[in-house]
Amino acid sequence: MAAPAVDPSAEPAAEPGPDPGRRRGGRLRRLLTSREPGPGTGPTWLCLRLAASAGGGVLLYFSFPPYSTWWLALPAFALLGPVLWGRGARGGFGYGFLFGVGFLLPLLQWTSIYVGPVPWIALTVAESCFIGLAAAAMAVVSRLPGGPLWTAAAWVAGEALRGRVPFGGLPWGRVGFGQPDGPLLPIAAIGGEPLLSYAAVLAGLAAGELVRRLVVHRSAVVGNPAMPALAVAAALAAGPLAGLVPPTAGTPQRSVTVAAIQGNVPRLGLDFNAQRRAVLDNHVKVTRQLADEVAAGSRPQPDIVIWPENSSDINPIRNPDAAAAIDGAARAIGAPILVGTVLTNPDATTTNSSLVWEAGTGPVARNDKRRVQPFGEYIPWRGFFRLFSSYVDRGGNFVDGTGSGAVDMAGVRVGDVICWEVAFDDLVADSIDAGATLLAVPSNNATFGLSNMTYQQLAMSRVRAVEHDRPVVVATTSGVSAMIAPDGTVTQRTGQFEPGILVDQPTMKDTTTLATRWRSAPEWVLVALSVVAVGIGVVARRRGGRHSRRGRKDEHG
Image 1: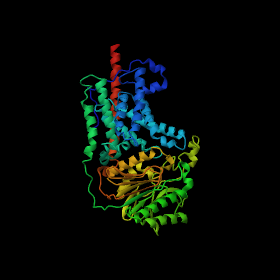
Image 2: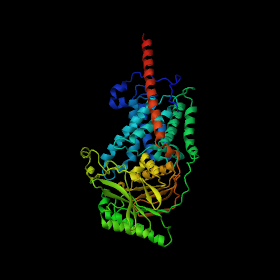
Image 3: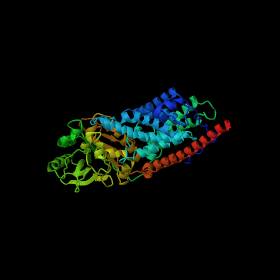
Image 4: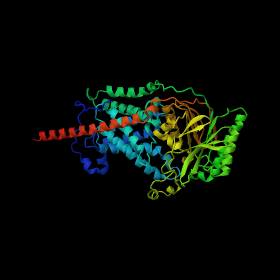
């Protein structure tokens, strides 16, 4: 795709003119007022822009699960786009920051369940700054011909940055992860979550541009609604069209009977780990219950069994009692169990690990979590953050593991994507590249109570199923556990904080989607396009500013 060119017939930038309110409005007003303001000035317009920014963020939040209103992402960006149009980078940052707060404050509320509001608010502010940076870039490129194309790319570039820094990034809340119930979902099989985000954001921004041209401008040239209308239609049609692109065929695969066990935890809260043996016993008990149902003929015999992350926080390699309990469960069910546990390494470091446990043999394979969660599994800058919350001393000291992210279980190559890892494109892709024909997402959501966190994570798993054309098994300690088909459909699920058993017979696949083959290439193409567009936008604005100043100088002789 060619970089955007500056159209000499494009609408000229509004002249800045004097703004008395700017002098008396203070820093916030200066931040939200560009040197090249878009249509509408004065306190009323400022209030409307503030409301549209924060309100658009709230709408984006409600487009995410557990709500099924995926389409709210479109009006969210339809509000943000006109607010950013024609603004400077400082104004764009301010409005984008407000949009981010409106979106992330409710989205990340689960982080405050047991540690209080300070970490939650601090995280929201930090992550909203990244959205502000993306919006600053969006404002700079908004006047270029085909503006929504470049502004949507700038948003994806912001998500790419936010998903990588600091401390490995926080990909939570990427727009594509809110689209598993929408018609755009098949796009994930073409370009992964980044292209899915791009299409959803583009549709919303183009809708906003259409409204802006119809309502604000009357010019037949500048206000022509045909192009943004076409962009909206193209973005929305991209999903069904992407669904027509088949993955590359693989070798014939067999159906496998898979069981997921949700044992539940003794109580809600951070201290559920204080009853680690009770958690293990719960999973042993529910697995034996499944064995009884198999013996009675009410359930099919599973080939493999998936337990959640932290299902045995007692190290079964060093603790004979835990090993005997797990081995008894594996013997009863007659299948290997993927057990989530915590292991201490020879150098005294700790890993969040999965063990493939076979009855009578013990662990025959191991996979360590490859990207541990900051402020949960480990605390960066512990001394500094202790100043804000004493809960940092309850954080772990885990280290990243190494390996392919896949294990063999009874002849099935299982991609082991442990909890938080499902949010990271590269980790899931690595498991597929390692030959996984089934994705397992063992997770422990007990520390987040009855919040929306588990539904948000389930949505990510649904996107991953489509992205790589694989069945996905989500096994959690306390819910929601689920079986997900390769088209993203949830075929079975459990409730929260109750024991549960899921048994399904998915067909193992080794097909290859374009997203699997291209990995992060679509994302980097969008990032590159946004960088080029920002460069052109900066040059265009500087030239426009010089021409404007020269014109005023000529007027005054």
